[in-house]
Amino acid sequence: MGFNMRKDRLCRDTHGLITIRRWVCSKEWYRSKKHVHRTDRVREPRGMTREGCRASMKINFDREKMLWVVTEFVNEHSHKLSPGNHSQFLCCHRNVKDYDIAQVQSLRSVGIKTSQMMDHPLDQSGSYAAVNG
Image (cartoon, rainbow, N blue to C red; front, side, top):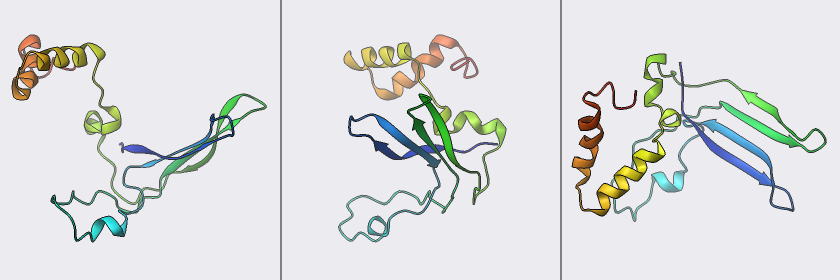
């Protein structure tokens, strides 16, 4: 079972050091009404992804102990969680290795089309299963 999370609130001290950090479920709260009912919209709006979920985690930096401490943890999701076998598709589990980024940038610099760049790792590995394995 899984879910996406995103950064939410951040507080800094007078020296600019982070003292409080909060993460929330990606479906936390709702989209702001000013963005839902815009009349000057040029593009089609993105689909609604927020469902009022309250799941979150907040950590504070304890200066005396020089440790990060979890001060708030809410594990109440208002939506179904992704099945465990779909965890690789969650945004927070996706990652691209540095050498893959460098390779794509070099292909782009010599004029290779994006669709051809996407086929390149497949051509090198020989199968879809081996691309990220």
